[in-house]
Amino acid sequence: MRNAYLVIRSIIAWTIASPIFFLSVGFLILLAKIIGPERTDFLVRFFSRLLMLGTGASYRVHRTTEYDRSRTYIIVSNHVNIFDPFVIYGATSKFSCGMELESHFKIPMYGWFMKVYGNVPVAESKNTANVRKIFRLTKETLERGTNLMVLPEGTRTRTGRVGEFNDGIFVMAQKFKQPILPVSIVGSFQLKRKGDWMLRPAHIVVHVHEPIEMDNVKREDVPAIRDKVYEIVSGPVHADLIAYPVEPPPDPEFL
Image 1: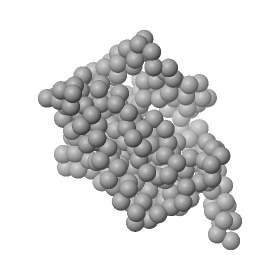
Image 2: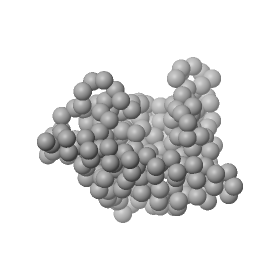
Image 3: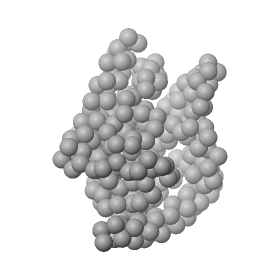
Image 4: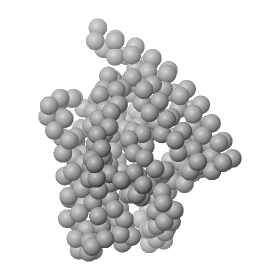
């Protein structure tokens, strides 16, 4: 009986969320081409929150008092599911874009949306030319005053726990002297899990933590900064999993 309820609920949630996504993205792409993506920032934030409402999840944000809405940050968060960019965007202020695999730019609608809004493509192969390109595009993004959203695990979690962080974005933060804004997405694993199509009831809480300044950080200190950010981001996530344990989904991947 419980399974039947979850299936029916999921079908209804997808039926609501999917039109919100496609209609909103289509409208935003058109509007961004006319007036520029930065001027649509408030609409993207509204759409992000509306999309989460469409999934049936409750959504709230806890921001530290040290968070300065006017500053430009490299936003570092855990990677849970396909809704992560919208969860983060709805929780922060200021125009933002993200880092995405280059192959994702070929996805209809979603890829067009990312391209119009200036997201940074990340090539699958890590040769010298591709690394230099990522550094250049990241620098240009930050110099424009645009926040950059990064999910340094590189893949969605299968257990709900936060995976190890890759070094790349922390090296760039040190090189560009750009502050890091740690963000924890808690409860989103209950909503949508890698390997499972269903949208379950969930209470999503986004923690926007105190920024970490990078002005005086040396190259050799990068691993320690990476580990510090990992502890900050993973803390609320792992505490929630202990308090409210969930079973991982079956292995075959869907979405």
